[in-house]
Length: 314
Image (cartoon, rainbow, N blue to C red; front, side, top):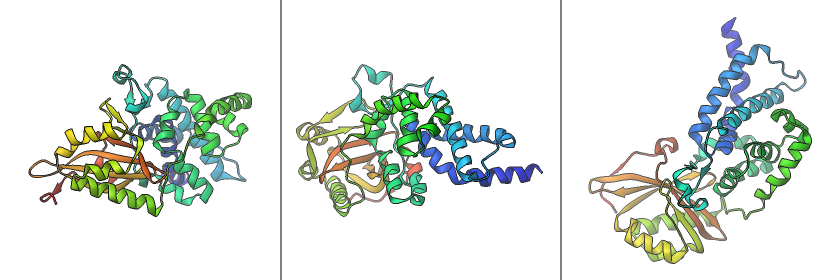
């Protein structure tokens, strides 16, 4: 009997695990924290499963909403005891000692979006862009949850109020303040032009061609390397940093995807092999690179990337 109930539970919740992890990642700004929260949420769901009564006319939607209710409330509890996550460009040097850093999201963690219709898929990808995530972190947790449940997941105001144990008026008030986050320029994604720019960017790094790199940057481009608090703004400052630091070494770049944007695993030649240094995520708009975030603590294994590349530099 127990095995039958367990199998029923597993079959009912399995289709939603990927999207719930993505939801918790948006809430928390960390894949590591999101997976921990979802693991805890699944345990709570399993414990409550015998008493759960989904609607007979729409069982799948009932299960999905129930899981989002549990996971969202676990996120809110987690956020009550955790500092918000940031990027260096969003904090002052004094604040850098107290914040935690945003983590990148491997593109394959959004595989669930392939099942969505085109409009929903676009919203799902836009909601994991770095600029949106940084802005989310500045919302109070319950406003953050209201925005995501309404604008990203498509729940009605009444449904969102039920999931958050609050009133429709409170949801609408939170949403009115939170919607300002959506008014931002969208980056270029999944276009041949962006792919070609990314290819040329990697080639310029591997060739040590600082002029080519800088030519692909916007005038007001930003370059940061969390967890280091320092960051650089503008072509001149970025160029000076590159020629006096990273470009004194030889590099190999492997293309990947993070947060729906072109990204590269970067490997520095150490005299014997190319060793991992960081995951560079590019924000491209209008055919130029507006921001590079090099996540120095990124877990290459999460992205299916090698720990080192043997062989002489090219």
